[in-house]
Image 1 (tube, helix red, strand yellow):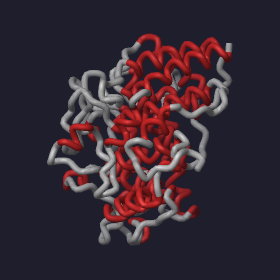
Image 2 (image 1 turned 180 degrees about the vertical axis):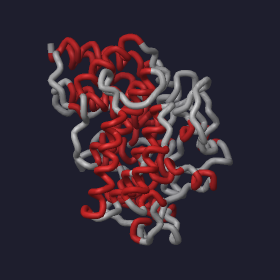
Image 3 (image 1 turned 90 degrees about the vertical axis):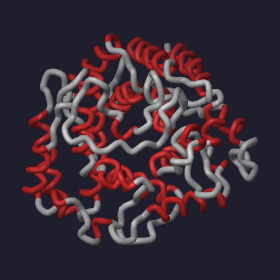
Image 4 (image 1 turned 90 degrees about the horizontal axis):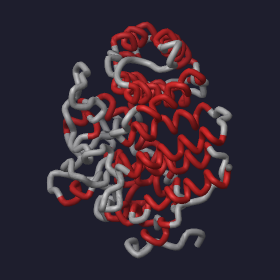
Length: 375
């Protein structure tokens, strides 16, 4: 049965043909960053952004292709992130001023930038926000933090839980002793809000709730706390996979990431079904340019507001921060998720690590200074 699972995933690997060529063409030699989509590169209004650059780096590292990044290319990427740090606040910002007013984007940019610099053996040029009292007001005390947690609407689980887990990077800036009472408040509140029957958090359609639960998973993982009610979550995942339409790459990736994190012993028959459904859904988002779209109809121009779909509602949404034109095209947000799905499926099935065969063949001709993997 395991060989059958290997065959399913091997067939799915064909979806990545052309993907690394698409990825290479998103790189900007001048800034050292990566664009979000082809339309971003072609449009004068857009520049390489923090999330896309960090995601591209994650893709390359995940696929065992890190050696394809020359020393000069790595240095350019380091300079890209270092140049994004505001010396006054310590945060990392993209060029669009609207990004600074989206607390989720700012928190993600901080985490992405520090992660990328760490991978490249580099560090920020300026002190971080937590070292200069620039953290959000909810970090003033555990009581203020608890009040803030309860103020976050979960009418759309995905967006609400994203806001909740976005506090984690700020808690990480504290010492372990300072952090502990804040962490107690968060875990106590999360426990009180989890649905005991479904294991999910918040409101919305099944995939919206699953995506919110995935967001909270990142909080639990950050602090090495087990996710509660995994059996109930698993039942909810299986029901959604079988009965709901996955119109967003996040709806495909989030169930798989949850399953990987829960580390449950799953029957091989169930794994095969989950894998087949997942790869079928991924295929619907593959594009002619070689990439994957975040959404089934197109690539969302502003992924920071793409969690709330037409007909859905969330209070006080931030202004859209466009990264592309929203065409039927691949985008970096979807690309990084597609890669994570593929590797997570192998891990779930207990299969040995096997890298995609396309990375070297497609990147080498486009990056003249790249060396073959292993050289």
